[in-house]
Image (tube, rainbow, N blue to C red; front, side, top):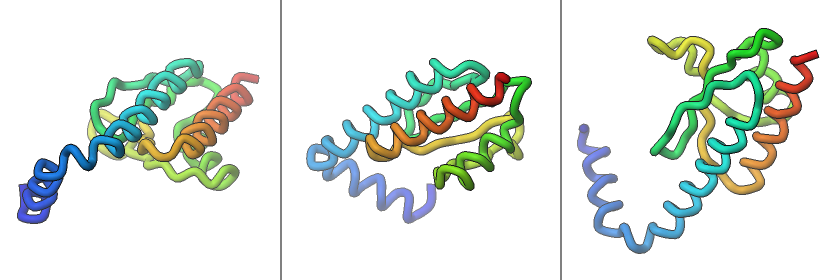
Length: 118
């Protein structure tokens, strides 16, 4: 850990009770993302205990790069393409956000994946 990471961790630990509502909200949205993505065919979703969800596009109808591009350009949804990292071929990462952001992401992802099945 570097100085900034240690300082941030110390602040969080000292103020854990005041941060509890934010932690609960982020956890709830992360869990919604996990559940929602698992309901979409063609995706492998990895368990998460962080503020983000990692998933792999395994559909024959669409490449991960196309899903990434369409989420960004067609829907304005920001996610990370992490496929360049070792053992993460075809993987994308989405951070937990607001309930509205989660809904928009899940709806757009489901629509794009369903369309790619044709």
